[in-house]
Length: 321
Ligand SMILES: C[S@@+](CC[C@H](N)C(=O)[O-])C[C@H]1O[C@@H](n2cnc3c(N)ncnc32)[C@H](O)[C@@H]1O
Image (cartoon, rainbow, N blue to C red; front, side, top):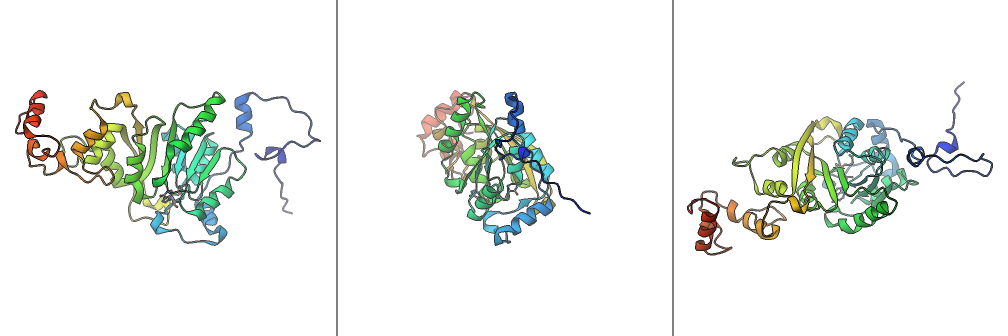
């Protein structure tokens, strides 16, 4: 005969002690924290599909880049690449069914998850209902006030003495907001130490592997290298997602620089106005506009050619460069 054994209530993370329970000796802080967190099991193909089929909506939304991760070892790797550990604060963009969220929580992090789709926000909230390790914000990340959300969480951690000085970002993001995410997060070295993203493979290589003085080096590379040290970590085949996208993905890590480590420019704003026209779209102007033009001509909208020539001489470049 099949017999089902219910887990002991005292093992459940939400279980409260009963009056009839015998008194327990106090646990050391680290052990107590780990014990209060029962490891939730890994997500695989079946759990992800089951979770998507729950609550009556089945079809992933293309407009929101909903390609769900089916391979929990890739989620583990994402967390490892960011070195997520007990007490960390991690921001996750687009938790979806919560498969990566689960890994981050199991690693001991407090997760602040920003999900645009109200259906998925409810799903992930319900999944982790009783934990204090998760805050779900139903918001569009590209319009989110990250500093205000993060600062209060980091301050709370600080007050109990286990504040990591910086938070981390670990996310499998919709490919269509990659540029927005990079533009928004990389200048935030004051609150994040690293940003680990699962992006379209081609985008990840373009952001991490381009070297100066090659034709692939674009304005966005100047931006990325100004604010961070990027590193392409590994490729993720498209077969790991549901529904399967038309392209492969890859994990990239950006180690964010502190303000003191930025290249020495008078102000980042005026520097970027010289090399890039529009930081929102990375449309080019200025130095990148017309690579065959002389700089003294293409930068004329910033200051007179004579001043540009003097500046070029000052750094040892020919005035016709
Ligand atoms: C590629 S799926 C990843 C889901 C989940 N993290 C996983 O690995 O299976 C992207 C998720 O981001 C959400 N999303 C799309 N656009 C968003 C935005 N602008 N802000 C926040 N979340 C967004 C989608 O609803 C979806 O849940």
